[in-house]
Amino acid sequence: MTNLDAELHGLAPFIELPPEPELAPAVRARIGARRPRPGRLVLALALVLLAVAVTFAVPPARSAILRWLGIGNARVEFVDRLPDVRTRRPLDLGVHTSLATARKSVHYHILTSKLVGKPKDVRLRFDQVAFVYGDHKLVVLQSEGTFFTKEVGPLTNVDRFRLNGADAIWISGPRHVFGYVAGPGGDHRSELYLVGNALIWQRGPLTLRLEGKVSRAEAVRIARSFR
Image (cartoon, rainbow, N blue to C red; front, side):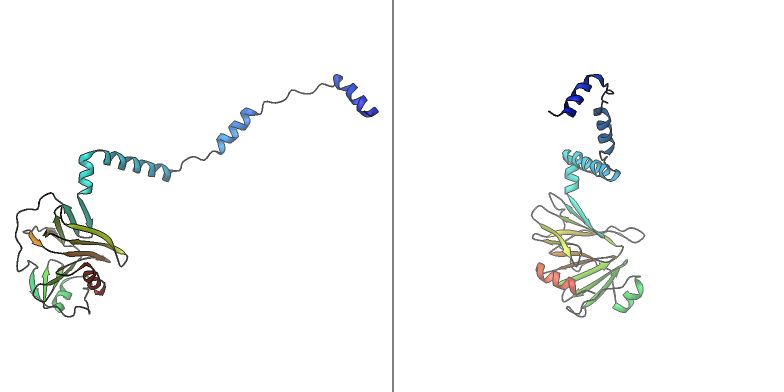
């Protein structure tokens, strides 16, 4: 040990140092202040998830949610048993008209297809335009404000997918029930009748329905051709 070290050790007992501050409370306070708080969006999302969980925990509410789905002007409802109705021919598609008259009668742009060509018949019901090809073997309807419903039984297949970036539904298998619910301006319920395979899709503000003896691939190909 050097002389300097010895002198310092000798002075240590005579030096009075201030008491050491308690740092733990201040550190805990600063950590708590910096802890991120859940934002409003996170809180809202948590409340939504909680509401969905509670809803699905209640059997009647869960059943009501899972028994129908909608797309545009269409509502597809799943039922345990279809009503006792018959296949209707000819279809109740409205009054006979021409494409030129239909274009003057509705305020939206009517879509047509070069793939299927000129329809054999054009019908108008409220703001719904229907094209009939062949002997009712293929029918394509389009509208912006005419609502319709479809009831499907437990054996009917209902597939929801995306078509041209929008929602679409393909209904196949055993026949299902179709009927109008309302048109622009009020309630216009119609008689229900049985129908076969159908494709429902959206194109901008329009809801379109294709019905006929076609496969899903054929129906999608035809749907994409309407512009």
